[in-house]
Length: 582
Ligand code: PEP
Ligand code: MG
Image (cartoon, rainbow, N blue to C red):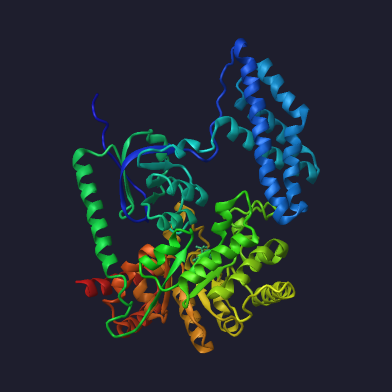
């Protein structure tokens, strides 16, 4: 058989490293539904397949629901009642059974058609309750189809060799689940450089290329492929020469990593003696040990929502919270472990705690807004967090703050939780530092006012860029406008730094800019002295800082802030770095 021709696709280099291996394709978005004829003799079996799917779907929904009842109370759990009721509704199930028999069609097709038709009918009624019912029906239809099609991903649990996943779309939880198996590379159609899936790929050290439109249609399982997370290339059917070339590049990268690791216990001190604190961003528990291995000084951002995502559909209990925060505090002591309260909502699923459906979730009930809107739910987290505070130096960080009122309301909420613990005789520290993420332009612009009422700032550049530029950080179509060096952003960073300095509070950066060698000189020049990043990035950034002079960077930053476009800033920085590394 002639060898298939090599194809090279250019995507976005999202997470570094090179992977060479065989493909496994995954389609996670809407699955195509086909109609198959079912012969007379197979009709009973097809109906039984449907009934089994209905039973198992119901069990799955009930399992999710019981976790919700325990943690959040009956009221929220009732959302699932509608789904269970629909599945138990004999008229609905029998309608599907009847059509399988009369149309001699496969269960998937009939479920799809029946739900679509009913949804359309409900939507035509001018009654908001009916439209809600249509939404429930849509969910139930999806559950059933996934069950019928066996999209439970169990096939990947059986992987016995290293593979590269080629997918249309991956949620952060898909990435966690896959990354812990024998997955060595990811090639995905959607997703930007700072999407949460990308952040997980960094955490798990898996090369990732995104923005490869239509890639799942061109690759088949077992095809030889290469993912180059450094250049953003995806290669299908590499020639023997390309295989050898990429394999040797991959090995060179690995040996450079090993060399860097050997120097990672050195201080992050610039040539002119300025000490920079490099902290770890932690998403997954396994990174707690990595933080020390790679030479990080404490934790600058623990994304606590990953605890929720990992345990879903079970909700973390107070003890779960307390255990993980205690582990973090003890691993960092006496240095701080900065724990961010749940940043749920937006794209980070919060089905179990949200009882609303939002048209525009990224601008909706997310982060601190959700915490304040559903205090009952978040009390569990805060109780665990405060109780863990006696084991080290925990700082509490609030996500997505956009007004001073949110900080004040949070303080009142925290005080009520503390009084509760006090009344129960549970030990905790009252002097916890409470700080905010600066990741919404309104917060950046009032940094001087915020600085008077909080204990520290941490700049979340991922969202700050998204919200300042009005570009979705997950959308590969608008990556050109996702400009970390836009003058608007530099001005905000400068203002936040000077406001923090005047108020005498610490300020750091914990967005992906902090881990990017192209931007670090500018951040230091702007006055940032704390950078928090994925543990694996620490040795690289440390090596870079050890070759820089901060006094020169201050002048460089001053120059950059006055340049009119991101492209000009970028070229100025590149020119400077070329001079340093030459
Ligand atoms: C950020 O927005 O920069 C940030 C660090 O938070 P996240 O990436 O979790 O939104
Ligand atoms: Mg953010």
